[in-house]
Length: 425
RNA sequence: GGAGAGGUGGCAGAGUGGUUGAAUGCGGCGGUCUUGAAAACCGUUUGGCGCGUCCGCGCCACGGGGGUUCGAAUCCCUCCCUCUCCGCCA
Image 1 (cartoon, rainbow, N blue to C red):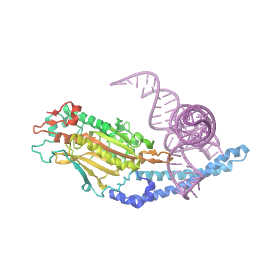
Image 2 (image 1 turned 45 degrees about the horizontal axis):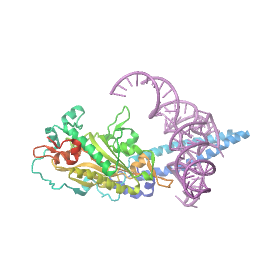
Image 3 (image 1 turned 180 degrees about the vertical axis):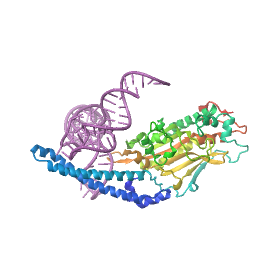
Image 4 (image 1 turned 135 degrees about the vertical axis):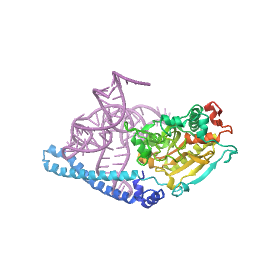
């Protein structure tokens, strides 16, 4: 949610920001409602002040034995007027709130302006020593390889649940678990995060807090009977840990990392990149979440990307960093880097991580604030998060990059102590 | 699933229609005293909104929402949550 005061004071900046993000320019409507709202509040507060003043006199009048009937009558009229204004105000508040909830965050000034993914910018890439985009033998894609080695079974996953629900078997299941444990340990030991194991069903307030609702409602699973949503990312429960809280300055920056399965309906995306692991309804992800002071958040964003990169370097997997342009930026994000790993079978880069700074956008929705040392004022924190990383796409790159001409898969050095074996097949 | 109890300030805990945004205690912060500390004593200590922005003034909030009333923490309705007991399941 954007700050209404900021919109009031910088309408043109907001207009431009919304245009750059490819969103509807509703600034005019917002300003109109805002003005109406403030006018009614001023009017109403005056009436309430009168009512309070008279009310406090009534016990005194009664004590003196004076007649209160005429006062009551007048105050009844005032009361009715207040009720009317209250109603009007509620309607305006609802309307304004609804519009603001549908208004996306604005991009940071360092984000390139662009319409679509075409205009994203590659910031840097990292390739393992001796790496080549050309291979001397035919690389099997992760589906064939998974089948051949009997470590991934998409058919049976489909039988159990439906398409997009992967089944890992044997060394595949172990490798997946090893990846998760490796990444968690890495962030805990080398990057100073605190581990979180959150609930994976959350209520509607939590989904609203991080901005998945209302915009992405159709992409979420929903358990109607209990009003709970299976999380699309650990960002939701972990960011909501501090919903409706006031943090103290000296505990910031808070850095959490947690593993959860993630659930996405991916409505309407069938056919495109939907085979195997490329688009799934359930996947595993290790997520990093930060709560930072506003002045620190962009530095923390760079750190977040670096933390995710460290994992890939430790695994020796080729990747590149993409800075998303304004048009490709998600609803809540002010700035976002994608990390894409190389798939030699697909011959393309696959998004394995997304690291974003939401500035105060989520904090305002979720009411997450902090207080500076010695200050009475509260401010909204900046929230950030990034996958560190999602295992499904990472698994694709890993299986493909580490396969041998014989169709076996070598386990990366860093994972061997977690798997207990060095080669699959 | 059945029965009961309860949701008040950072915490504990009063308050059952009228200067109660809220007693009291603890905690926190500031001060006095002290060589220093403790103790004691004094003071202070919620958040949001609107107007003016130097000082300030006003409004709202006692789980959420609605209602009764001149006036609600207090009465009524409704929803949510927590706890205890029983049953059921893991």
